[in-house]
Image (cartoon, rainbow, N blue to C red):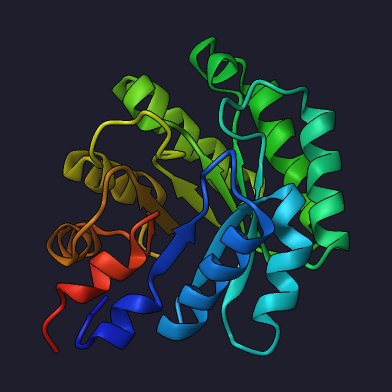
Length: 222
């Protein structure tokens, strides 16, 4: 992927609202920033999806609902229901946290079914399966990628960005090798400047998740 301008970079950014105390005014300001920079998407909790959709209507900025955040330990039926509600409220995409413990247990049947259930509930909307790679060993990461490719989701994602270390270049390269060239990879984790974002894209990422979109774009030199 070639990034030749700040506008190109903006179309790779998923702008995340992760504050548990976000008010209506906070959501409106957040969406105003997304409109100003014409970002690819905003990622918001389910209770903010409807408001974000109304704020970003006809702007080209997508609204992605956060499902199973941040731990991924809710029952798969709860995640499916969360997804259905988000779709009903206008979400364009879904970012969901897989059951990480089940993946580490090697419970492929459970994890695959969870991914497929969320994908089905998303009704052809893009789904990003968050693996929390910093909690996984190499074999776990490869298994998560294999299940994602088999399940029908469109992206694997490295992290929720909750208490995660900085995004790893090695993880991006490993995930890209595992899923192939046509599959989506989203990278999150402490990305707050254009240098880090561009390096991760060069390593194989399609999307960059950040809660500091303005700072990332500010440092880009057209």
